[in-house]
Image (cartoon, rainbow over all chains, first blue to last red; front, side):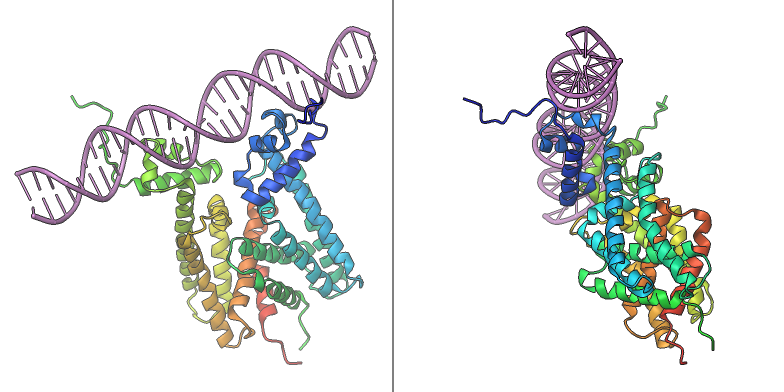
Length: 205
Length: 205
DNA sequence: CACAAAAGTAGACACTAGCAACATTGTTGT
DNA sequence: ACAACAATGTTGCTAGTGTCTACTTTTGTG
């Protein structure tokens, strides 16, 4: 008679990804501060020191989480922007970008906070690279808009930083409870239109 | 012969404020995550359980820190805005506000991150009130601008939220290493001017 | 097929937050 | 003046954590 307790093999198989999955669940449920390596090990059914083979450190795991968050965010942003058929409809694309960002941030509040937190491993280039990749998309939008004369042609990166900062700030205020979710859509809309008006070349009088 | 070891009285006298001071030093040096109640107790020269008489919880202390941070920020913002003599020079006042915020955030990076973090005690009304008070100032500026016709008259709070969000986002990007301090001044300047252009009533054509 | 590398385990250390029971000091009503 | 009480500190405990080292099992490879 085989014992009912499904004998797990000595080697887990794909512990690293399973740990990351468990970590994301824990993050969603209790926040980054509460996340415990030993807890994750228990969840996955492995000894308390096993995670150390895959993550040198608690922080290393959090960084990996942040990194995967940025790549996922990047994908969602890309998809949202590309859904706007007209490749040169800057207002629509910007709005799609901003809305997608805000959506991601609301659906992954704790993860977003972790991603934007300043306390990453000093040598964690992977996470900053992933962040830059996600952000870089808006530079492309802006650059295109400047080339077509819809935006002031100063510094494409600076202009991109500003709208990105606005969206970032909105989500930060949302997740810290300063604004209610209901106001979100309107807020993002006016933020984008105001930005476009503000960054547009001055009307000839 | 009195012993050299300055015999501390049983009662510390003002343990609460001393703890907060030590906490702020620790925050500045090692960040909120590293902050340990027992460490603070040692710093101040008191037993490990003494802080509990003044802060129910580690989080309670962090909340108190955040609250005092908001009131200090509010004072600095008020001072900066009032330094602009002309009471109705909206651009100058907005720029002063934004610059003061960014200055505070750079000089108190870890504290700012703590203040804007979402993980406050659910019933911590004091910190949200302090935050609202600091933020409320910009509403006054905006309202005045709208009354004088320099800004679109829609929703004063929404307009205020947007510029506030932008400044918030800029500091967040700064403290997470996305932008270098050197670019800060220029970034804030164009953010404010663009905002003013974008929120201004449409020019009659 | 031996044997080194990879992956998981067990135990220990130093540290933390939070709790309870006790000690000391201030304060206050009579 | 002083007893009672509240406020404040202290010591000792529990349960939990991250990280380290040494050991065991598996896997892959020359």
